[in-house]
View 1 (spheres, rainbow, N blue to C red):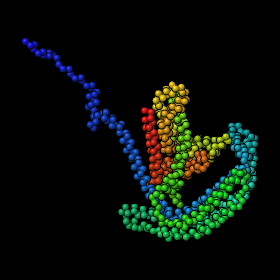
View 2: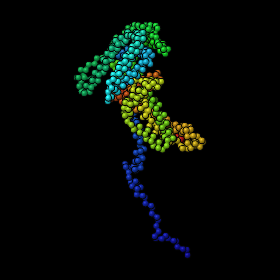
View 3: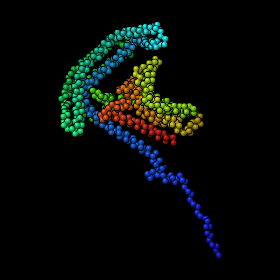
Length: 588
């Protein structure tokens, strides 16, 4: 018989599945809007990029919305400038301005000649004046007054003042012939100046009538919108016949030709005769240069006459002219009785100059400190240096601005007068608020950004690079210069670009310390340009935005400046990110 099949014991059963942890069950049951907790956290942090893009788009749209109408308003501004005859008069005014610039050139030569006759004796007397003035002040405030010493000091000061006055009087007497020539040269432009004054009054009157008509038209529209048609009809708008009004201006062309011929004849005679004597070859060369500049100025008279002859008020102003007047305009002039100009070039060059000074200081200090802290410093030095540098970024910029006004600017102005610094171009300088003061402070602000990002870039260089360099017998300095820094160069460059973006966007420091002069810096002065006051794009927005009428051309112009500044900062940050991305790939 075959054995019966075996059956499992009744007590044997399949093993039960393991129980899931309690926290996993709770986690699975926790849902928000149908999403698990993990999905919520992932969506929250993963949406940062999306939120950033939305905010960036909103900022861009806002700037475009507020600034888009500027170029149309500026075209209207330039149109009335032409139709009122202001453009015609400015062609003549340009000759007057050129002559004024030549007069200033001659005055500068005269000042240098005076210094030649009075120095170094005048410098010694002025130093004695300063020393005696300080001594008198100290004696007057002393706890135990010394009347005899005070009287002696006051007597010495009076003698010094008298000696300096006598020295200057003698030198001025020697320049009598020079002063006579300068006076005749300055008075030569009077015929054209008188004509410009007469024609300018006519042109300004036409422009004022046009602006009054615009105000009346706006008032009428407001009354109509308020449901008051009777009052709106009472507002009278008198149309302007520009062709008839301009006849008084364009009809003065024969008078211009006569005045210009008289001015040209006088100036040619003055520079054809012997120029004033100069005591040094350098000053003689400057006077010869002045002669040539005057003849170059006279050579422009025929071209000006031709431009006046062919000028017409009917030529329309294109959108391109409105755009180029803003981008390449050399004047930012508002609330002018003559003509408002919105040229961003003075603001852009001022921003670039201040940023260049800042980077010239911040790059060596920031990158150098990063290399030292990461490669050379001891742990104790790292704990002391890193927090100190990074703390600078916590200082409010307005506080740094106050420091620049009260301390740094005054110190730089005083230091510029030291004899051993007289070799530096632009020294000494009279203004304590200038591009140099603002640039030094912005350099201090940029150091933490450049330092932190450069130190991170150096820290990300693979350790194997350094060990391989040491294995080949390189010294620590050779390893840093030839291995570490080149490997981290892309990161360092991106750090510099982000530091530049930080500097370009700074407002309070440049507003308080840059001097706020709305002119293009004189780059012909070489390095001396750093001592000139400038204005910046951020500074003009902060200074004027609170005073403008919303919707006006001035209001729109400030938003366009902000838009330009926004794209500059955005471009710098985008370029830095591209470099960082390339850097990460290169060391992977």
